[in-house]
Picture 1 (spheres, one colour):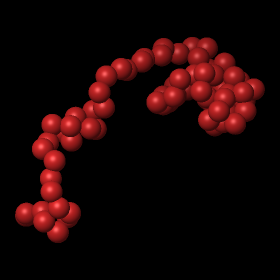
Picture 2: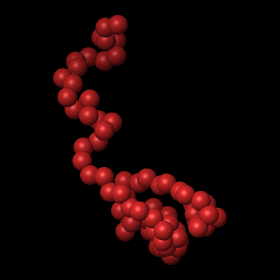
Picture 3: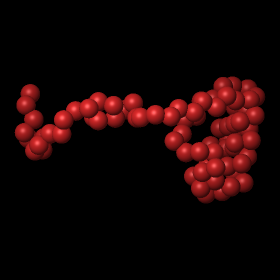
Length: 76
């Protein structure tokens, strides 16, 4: 990941999405120094967009009534 960000730094646009805060990146990469180096380059010329709210993927599942039985009881 560091090599990708480092090579693209100030040359190309890069979009990264994550459900983890920047403070948690050290644990993700198992190295706080590496995470700091990545974030240093990544955040230098960026715009951070934080999206809060319910999951878009789960929106239909949360409104559907629960089904009984397994896949063998589904009607086609």
